[in-house]
Image (spheres, rainbow, N blue to C red):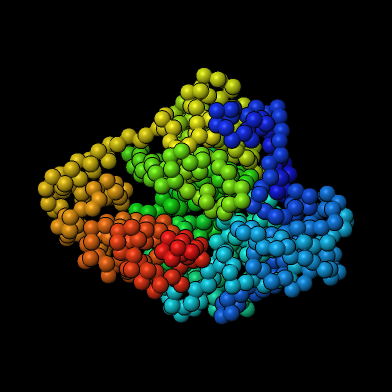
Length: 624
């Protein structure tokens, strides 16, 4: 549905054959036929009742670890139905009013992954629904931090992570990426702390502890975000700035000083930034992912604060989401690649404009290596290596893999190489403009691609082989590869080392993080303890402040039994909550005969990790 966004059912231009799981029968859709595709990860009926606007009035109790208050929904009962259905997960509903009158509501039985549908009786003319509620102890979106878990050690902290379907654990809502609404919020927090949301934000403390927010652009629930803690603000330029704990603010400001240049570079590529301000909040260490593209306020892991701006490409990624994801949104979680694949491609175009082709070629190659590893882990013939995947009756987080990110980006690069960059850039800018603040499904995008770029050129379609990319497993044989100018030099130095050259004799002085990652990733496993010691003596890897390098080094240390690194590794695991680092490191311990060490360390620091990270590690370490 191109103009009406507030719907859990998206009407799309597709061929009926696209529902067939048989890859050999799939065709790129034409624009002549329609079918109905439903988002199976929302129990709401937003296809029948439009969610127009949310007024949120909540209190954040950091001692009791609970959000309580009310959510007022302005609705349009276009289907003239008798029941409004909303998503909830571990919420206690105290009461509900419809058009000012208290009504009896019903919570359905809990459904795995989805939670409990909230059923509210409405009339055909109802316009206003107020739900009084409080969050539960199992709210998957919320991480409550004690003072000791923060950098300042003085005040507690709360932040949310609503993607993919976790907004329903702190707001009763229609929780699907294809359902957009505007919102205002009144948030009460303990005095002396700041509250921030994915909206217009304060830049200084409120004396009363009460903060008001406004988001006048319709956004889906997964982009609802809240953070409360001891944070301060510092501007970078007139429309960008950073928030962080006070004792980290200057480091963060230095690290992200070129954010304004990134915004300008992005606009030069694909049109104006349409969200007003672009600010960044660096969270305490437990944040489970690298960054979250909450509109106007990216939530960011502290693991990118390396002191040398070597990891700030993550910001280019989250910024790119302001076009791909936030501006044009995947209609369902089966279409996640339309969010992340486009964003990785866009991110690398931003990086290329700022740092040059040789630099971004390293990013493309490291991404290809990540994709190879993902395909190996998932299985080369597994349908989860398709771009358009089937998540029916599954946790949508099952689709948050490097397939969506790297395979999706490679498809766009392949199209660019076949039609020419200039033509492809014109197409992408048009795509963002024509679908701004709308949602799009895979089949709808393929139809748009055929009609607006490929021009029904069958030979070109067959050359690109889009079917194999979108509806086929693994990495297609025509996947593009980056030039290896810089990595060839890295390979030569690695070969010298493996043939006996001392680490001190290698030519590495001008290497960036990316060269070092390639150098270490391609080492045989395991190295000898003597080789590890030589590398460590020369490069101080065990004490590295670069989280990307440190995590890879600790994995190598576990594989080798290089126990000199274990104290630093435990310190790393005590202070980092990013799943990207936790899962492979704990996995290496579990598969290298060091299960007891993994269990001991995890038991010590489990509560430092976000519930999402705990869920992943519980399965890996505790078999739950």
